[in-house]
Image (cartoon, rainbow, N blue to C red; front, side, top):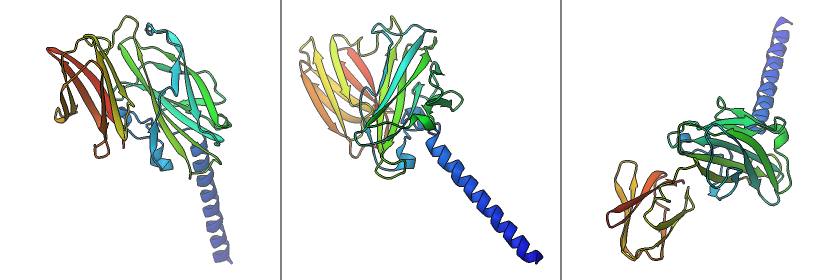
Length: 276
């Protein structure tokens, strides 16, 4: 009899533990993304695909702000908008973080919609809550950000996931970034000795497009280096008047690269992020 009762109690305890674990896991999946999966260099380029599978695509303008064109004022508060669009889907998630290239948090995130969003990772990331996942074809989340005082440039990294029934399988993952500049600061591209440089998409996965227009007709040299300073691609003596370059990235290791544009004694550097 004692053995039967003992066996019953052990079995009951196992069921309770399993159900508790299952409910906890389910809640964890629905109640926000874990910290460290925005696809940023500081997050080792990890994103939603680590858990949900599939491949991530990169799209612009999924993160926007009300920062004026002249730039942000240190210490001022701005509204950031994150949107997830996927026709036919009804469940949407996101994780966004303002970071330096080394992963350091830049500025302060503030929750303005506590029913639908929350902070995690000691305030470094903002993500959805259970009530913030629902939508038809899209979902939008708003939050505030206090601009930092110590830097001139801030990039918001965001990873977005959507599906049609709340379960893994058929999920779509999208990465997007937003770069903001301090008021009065001119970015490297804008200091580019009369060059109009556009590199897209960035981060890139399959292909990198380089569009370059220059006031001077003098030829330019394009060089891409990895973080070790090794030259991995060279395009020399190109006409800079209206240059269009397409680089296939299929066999490129993911990571951080730098595009150097040189015209005469002038140099222009653009940071690249390659994902796979």
